[in-house]
Length: 323
Image (tube, helix red, strand yellow):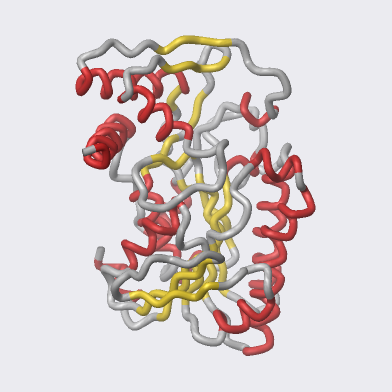
């Protein structure tokens, strides 16, 4: 992508570099002529053309070191689980907001104004009454996790107004697709898991009638959106939907996964309905399709992989790993 030449010569940091999206983002960044620094709390395997900083992003010293040497910060570290945020709100607050506070303070003290790209979530909108959902619809979080994500967006927007950073927040819809990274959240990556189950010949289960819409976006399309966000100047201080712009019911999606797996295994994979479990979070009942025109118009980015293609690519990768 020609526009991504803007990354050439930049020093780029990825927090959460070991994670599901972060690891794929790092792989994409090293294709450009930029200096990539991976930040993680745990030791990482050596990777050519990158440097590694083992550090905790909740620590102020970490951000002093990052900001002092960085042009673009992709901030993906922090809690990624709705369930963990509900059970431990204080830790969720620390992992989501404390790094932003330290980042802004470090940028203010050094007067360097880095570009910050923050990984937010489309569930900040809550239970929206109309579809598709555009960015002019007021977010109304109904989970602790989403509330903290929105706080982080607002902290960054305020820092932009104060002139300390140049930030953009990306509200990610349902991301799926293969990755070499790890996810610490059991309540994320559902489509990846059910596709793997279908390849094992297992029937799939949806709650209720399965006729609630989601917007599924393939991981390389998400990573490309992050790359554009790192260099597009007209995004400053704003939040954007990153999604396919197409709503598909969960039942239809699982049926696509079952059909793709069935082509490989020769088995008929069922998709069955079950009652909703007790205590399920209200956000799971949402209907969601994103309006992505704002980001597409601002950057020229658009999704390239549709759902059927994406599931086929996921199946191929899972089969490759099993060999």
